[in-house]
Image (cartoon, rainbow, N blue to C red; front, side, top):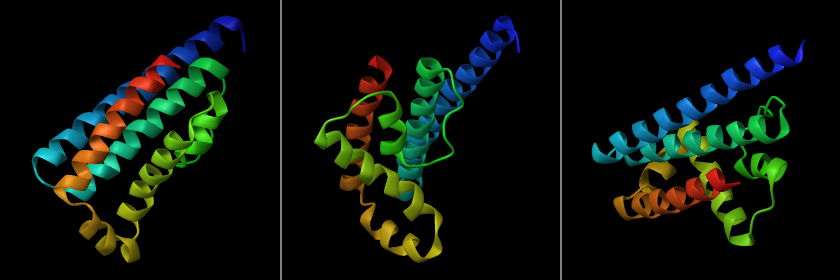
Length: 133
């Protein structure tokens, strides 16, 4: 693969991850407005995951790992605080708990309006931090 081909691939991959992350964030906001809180939180996770994968693509010039674990992704590109580690751990659960039937009911009950708004605020701060990496 030539250098030019590598740059084109990197740009396409980066564009994909960034655009997809933004679309997922917008979907999360729409779901929040519709009071579908557990679904909104699932899309919050997807948005952050894709943003981190964009940063891995940008910084390391490699394909990001096939994982949904946000801490594994962030650790590829930078160090995070213990508070951020805890936050990424909780948000990673939004992916798993929203997907699998045995977790859905418990997660549905956990995803109150207050809990969801709290995590939207945290995710917004994490998004800003990731973009600055």
